[in-house]
Image (cartoon, rainbow, N blue to C red):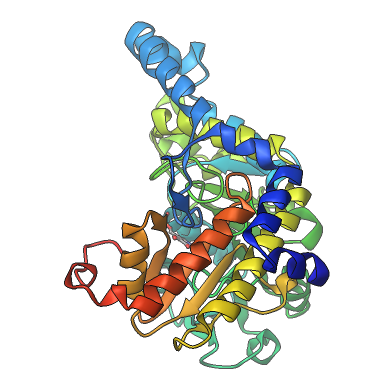
Length: 420
Ligand SMILES: Cc1ncc(COP(=O)(O)O)c(C=O)c1O
C-alpha cells in the first residue's frame, strides 16, 4: 500500500489514472449526487440510490395507491422485517434466520442489552466504552434502571483494556465495532473471546461497519448485534435499523418490547403475550413500509458490490487523505485522531482542529461535505462506491486553502444550526 499511496501523492493526474483503473468506478452511476459536490459524509447519511426512486414510486403508486391494504399480503409488506433481514445477513456474516430489520438502532440496543441481561440474571455489571456513541450509553443507563443494583463499567474511564474490566459479575459487554468519532476499529473476535471466557455475553453496534467492511458475527461468536442502515447501507434518512440474535439464544431470549408483531399468533388477537419462534419475536409493532422499500435499493447495491474490494479501496482513500493532509495542512494545528494503521481504522478520518466547526462550514460552502463532532473533531467519511481518488485530492486541497486563507473566520461560518 505504501508505494501505491506514494504514487498517488505525486499529482492529481496520478489520482485520475487510479480512478480509470478502479474496479469500483462504475458504482457511482448507481447514486444520485449533485454535480460538483464531494460527499464525505456517507458515514452519517448515505446518498440516494437511483433504484430507490423506482422502488418508492412502485410502492406508492401501486402498492399503496392501487392495492391499499391488500398489499400487507400481496406485496409482502408484513414479512419485510425478515425479508430485508435476509438481505442484511450476508453483509454481517450471519446465517439465515438471525436478522430482522425493524425500529431504530436505539430501540434495538434496548432490546438486545435487555435480552442479554436476562440471560445472565445473577450478574450485575454492564461494560461499555466511555467514547461510545451517546445513545448506546443512554440506552444502557435506561436498561440498567429497570433492574436492581446494576452497575456500569466504562472502558477508557474505569480501565484501559477490556481484560481489566471483566470478572464474574459482568453480564454483558456492549461495544461499537468502529468508533463513531475517531474511526477506530476494534478487534471483535478477540474481545468476544475474552468476554465469553468471563462468562458474559457480547452485544455489538455495527452502525459504522455494516456495508463498508467485512463483518463476521457468526464466526466471531457475537451474541447480539445492532446496526443502522442510513449510513453506508444508503437506506435513506431515518431508514429502519436491524437486530441480530445468535441462533443459540433465540429460544431463551426475551424481547422486552413485547408488541403484537412479535406474538406467536398476531392475528389471533389474544389477551396474553406469547413470543413467536426465533428472530421474529424481536419484532415489536407496525413498521415504516415506505422506508423499507427505499432501503431495499441500498441493500441490493451492498450485496452486489464486492465488500473486499470496498475495504481495499476504503483503506486507500483514507490513507491518501491522511497523507495529503499531513503534507499540505501540517502547519495549521490539525492533529489526526484516527488510527494511523489502516487495519485498525474504519472508513473515516477524524482530524482534531480547534476551529473545526467553522472549517467544516467553509468546506461546505465549497461543496465539500463533511461533519463536525464537538468538542473539536472534523469527520471525513470515505464511501468507495461513489468516491474517486480525485475527490480525495480535491478535498485535501480545499482544506489547505480554507486553512491558509483563513476563510473559515468569516462570520457566516460561525453560525451553528441544530445539526452539526
Ligand atoms: C454507533 C452509533 N449507534 C447508534 C446511532 C444512532 O442510533 P439511532 O438511529 O437510533 O438514532 C449512531 C448514529 O450516528 C451511531 O453512530
